[in-house]
Amino acid sequence: MTFQGVDFYDVDSLFSEEERAVRDTVRKWVDDEVMPIIAERYLAGKFPVELIPAMGELGMLGANLPEEYGCAGLNNVAYGLIMQELERGDSGMRSFASVQGSLVMYPIFEFGSEEQRREWLPKLASGECVGCFGLTEADFGSNPGGLITVAREDGDGWVLNGSKMWITNGSMAHVAIIWAKTGAIGDAKSIRGFIVPTDTKGFSAKEVEGKLSLKASDTSELVLEDVRIPKDHLLPKSGGLKSPLKCLTQARYGIAWGGVGAALACFDEARAYAAERVMFDRPIGGFQIQQARLAEMLTEITKAQLLCMQLGRLKDQGTFTPAQVSLAKRNNVNLACECAREARRLLGASGIIAEYQSMRHLANLESVYTYEGTHDIHTLVLGEAVTGLSAFKG
Image (tube, rainbow, N blue to C red; front, side, top):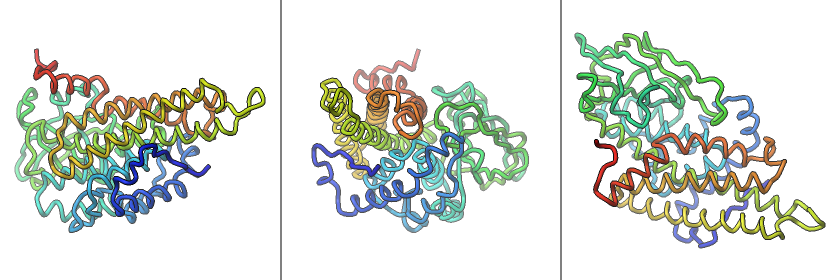
C-alpha cells in the first residue's frame, strides 16, 4: 500500500523547498526499504542493522548538527520531518536515530571538547559507529537525579561502577554516553557525562528479553564493573542533572514529530481499509461510526502537525523552552496512541495481524508514552509552567 498522507490544512505550504525535499527523500526510503521488512523484524525481535549505513549516507543521523563534523547541517524542522517519517515506519527506527543524534552526538557536540567532536561525530554521523545513552537505572527512571552509578578519579583516569536499564542501542553500540556521579551518592550536582567505548574491560550489555513493545529495537541493560577510561573521556562541559536533561529535551523534540508519523501511518491504513472493506453491501467508510473515527483522527493529527511546525520554528529561532517540548511530546504521543487504537478497532479482526501496522504502532507507542519522560511527568512539568509551583518538591 502506497502512503497517501494527510494534510487537511495545507501545512505543506509552510515548509521550505529544502524541508519538503528532505521529507520526501526519507519518505521514499522508508517506503522502499523499511516497510517491506519491518513487520518480519518486529516479529523476530530484531532491529534491521543493515539499514544503518544508508541512514548515515542520507544524513539522518545527527541531521541538525553542523556539516563541519560530517553532519547534514539541517534546520530543526527538516530534522523533525526525518523523525516523523522514520516513526511512520516504526518507532524502533526513529528511536535508533533519536538516540544516535540527540542523546549521543548532541552531548558530544554540546558538552565535549573540540578533539572529542572531531574524533566521534563523523563516525557517528556516517553510521560507522553506533552509540547509546546511559542515564536511566532500574530504580531511577522518572527521578534520574537519584542515579547511583559513580565515577571516581584514579591516577590518570576515571573508574566507573554501576548499571543502566532500558538502554536503546545498548547491545549493538560501539560507544556509550554514561552519566555518573563524581561526588556523594545524593549529590545530583556532581553528575557528569563520560564517553565509554563499549569494548572497555568491565563493560557489558545484555539485551532485554520478553518485550511486547518496540520489538524491532535494541533495548539493553548495561553493567559497568571497574570500567577504567582515560581522563580525556570526560565530557568537560557537562555538570549536574541539567546536562542530561538538556539532551533529553532534544530527543523529546524529535519524538513529538515521530508521534505525528505513527499517527499518519495508522490513519492512512484505516482510511484505505474503510474504503475497501465491504459490509452490508457497502464500504464501511460509509457508516457513521467509522467516519467519526476518521474525523477525530484527522482533527488531532492536523493540530499536532501545526504544533510541531511552530515548535520547530521556535527551536530554529532559539526561543523554545523545555516546557513547550513537554507539551508537544505529551500531546502528540497521546494522540498517536489514540489513533493507533481507533485504527486497530476499525480494522476489526484484521487489525491484530502483522500484515497491518496499526497494532504494531499501538504496542510501540505504549513504550513511547512512557520513555523520555512519562505522560504524567510531562503533565507536572506543564503544571509547574502555568502555576509556578513545582509538584516535584516536598
